[in-house]
Image (cartoon, rainbow, N blue to C red):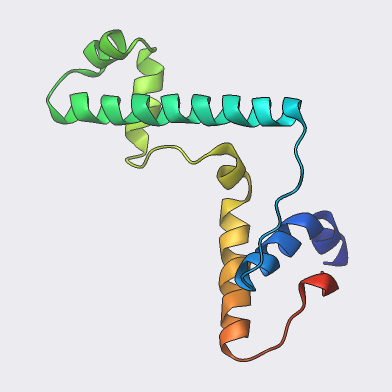
Length: 121
């Protein structure tokens, strides 16, 4: 367990700071900023494509026609239709399941009045 928490120390500390109302903005290099902007742009395109696929599907288009209209493979259309929600951003997808659980747990502890310190993480 210690190994797990040690591995995820940075995310745990960030979550604790958010719960405490503190947010830390680490300095980013120009290359890191460019990479982040490219990821956001790519994610925005994926979400728009996903919404378009669902819009056409609800309008009664066949999956093959949707693939031609949107400009993706029919396999991509089938995958998009397996999930009605648009894809999560990469950072959320990576940590979403356990960080949501951790955040909920920390919020419950704070509500109970259990003191915490982000520096302890």
